[in-house]
Length: 169
Image (cartoon, rainbow, N blue to C red; front, side, top):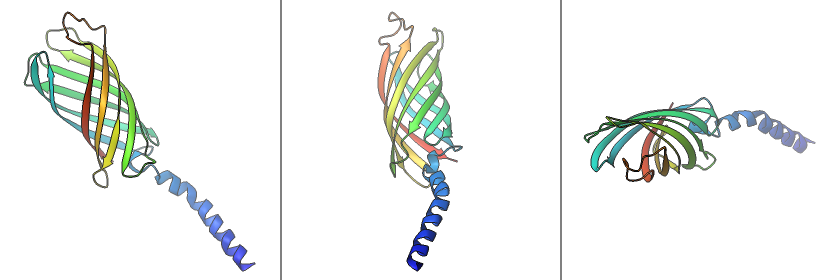
């Protein structure tokens, strides 16, 4: 009888604590969290090299699933380029320390003295824990430009690596 009582008490304690534990399972990728990303690196376009700098923010609507917005400025080359990118992404937070992700985006690219470009694309990669609330993202991106004029642009699709540093709040 005592053994059953202890087992029953342990079972009730486990059930009572399950919602609290489940709420924390997603950690920095849980509902209501906000991530800020710093974007930096180099890029090339129009036979010129650019320094790329940007920032992004993502908000988790549910555990693992976020909506985001990022802006980039491409400087040091000609013509000047800037990009605005709304996105959605799912992070497989169930994997500890290394969390795979997949996502999709729409991008508006503004190019000095040329028509603006719209593109859609997808990304996949992993986030690697770099601290309590910091992650390094490493992945790849595929982007397809809509209504692309091949007389102005060499290629209307692009595949490239991406590396990011993300801070969660």
